[in-house]
Image 1 (cartoon, rainbow, N blue to C red):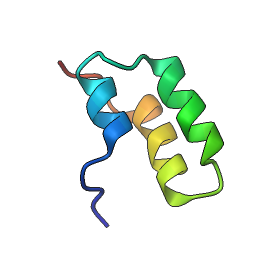
Image 2: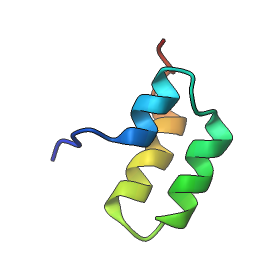
Image 3: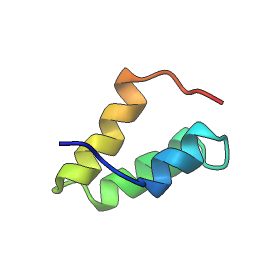
Image 4: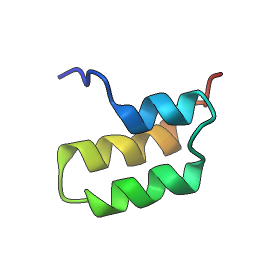
Length: 49
């Protein structure tokens, strides 16, 4: 499904959170769908400002 109001993604896309910050958040949540979603962001989607 769709993810709504993903704070880490919003911060990352606006340049308020760097790749390492997203990676740390994702690793903390690695066993959840949300953690996997954050890791996929780093690997599959270009950062947009």
